[in-house]
Image (cartoon, helix red, strand yellow):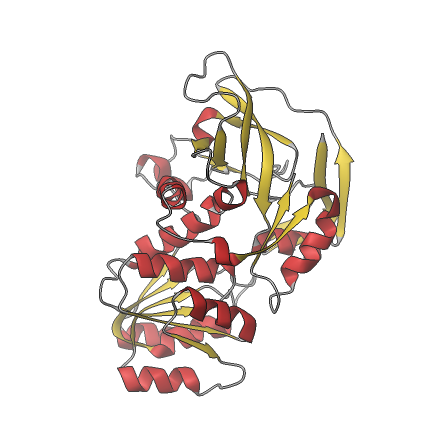
Length: 345
């Protein structure tokens, strides 16, 4: 089978490997579409994602969908030919986090396409992957594979919204108009926010943000005073999501929210330490919360996509054959031209 393998920074190779065996209680999935995530970009262009460094060849990809090719004899919930979105994680079920109902914080998690453990956890940019039955979420035959592949990043956005608490009628700021930021915008709208403002340093993603529901979309590089001006006019935002992964973005959130607000850190910040305006957290009594991946939100993401409750199609800007995966990563890096780029098999 054809597999995309990252050997180091800007060293991606298309290799032929044996098709994996069907695991007990599992299924063999023929992958049809997979989105390139920010973590995939870091692995490709830098050979690392934050503190996680590639130490052996890594198959990236965790935003994938496909069809069931075969199932183990004891599997009854899946059938060959069925379309599925794939949950990329398998939690241990017995650690403290899992027992507390927070499987996204499992210390023993297997998560596709990650170098956080060694040997690395291989991902889904392959013609076939073997998974546990629990990772497969069936979708209707009418749902395109490219749409089903949005289940994972949409689940990230839904979990971030869950971490924020009630948003009905609230004023919300989203910093960073990358694919996850745009999905957070869609999730915030579904949660009932009254007004949503979005910031970025590029015009193209901000134009897309306006198209899919942002009330205001501001280029803070072109107009650095725009966000402070909006915060002063409104008395500050009630909730903010930092999705850029930039320390300056977090500083903007802390400054732009009103006293008693909630700030959710969604983006992956650079490794190491950086100056932090902790006194603003104290003086304003800001609730600063992290949002790590997702848990039960994956099932809700699949339902939203399958039932047409959230329309992600405007975010898909390119679908590239797996044989041209390196070119796909190059496109995905061009944030002034592309939102979500997917690899198709």
